Amino acid sequence: MSHLTISNPIDYSVDDFVLEFANMNAKELALAFNELDDNLVDRAEMAVVELFHQQNKKCAPSEIFELFLNTVYVVVENKEHYSACLTIAYIESGNLNHFVEEVKDAFEDERFIQNYFYNDIDRSFYNALPKVVEINRMITNEEYENESFGVNWNIFQERTEAMSPKQFISSTQDDYAQIPVILSVFKKNIRTIITKNNKQEVIYLH
Image 1: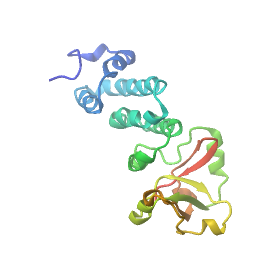
Image 2: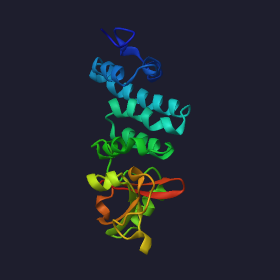
Image 3: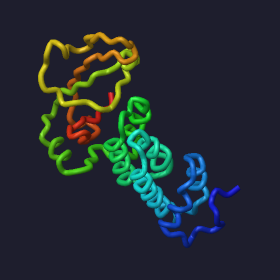
């Protein structure tokens, strides 16, 4: 059974593909791409990117990363397009606590360009960093026990008693107890720098 509404989409424009894909779920989109001739894939990928941008404008912040996962992440192989869309999805999303592993997988994917920068400010911030950088983040008990941390880190500014590495901070909910962690990392291993909520975040895969 074909997942495309016409048998031969050879004359389809990008806009035609956008309309074709608009109501597909992730599985249907993947199956539709499997039916395309190789010479149509680039055009279809551009349509998925365009569809992501169109639907992104209508989404609540809590829905944007899931939109990325159900569109671009499924089928787009072009590294520039993938990297740009992932960065936009990350910046414009709300709280991503429910997508920790998905975010990590997306940035770890070989389609994401190492040191891809969304703007010149982030590029300049990265270029100004020393070869070895101290970064920090607050992690949950679950992250600490699994030794698998989220991707967003801050440039470490000043060590204080409250920020001693691996010191537990009291919390009424163990799952959300905050543990400060500080790492020294090579600049070259930083995935990228992304400005979110007016602050530069280090994207680093631990």
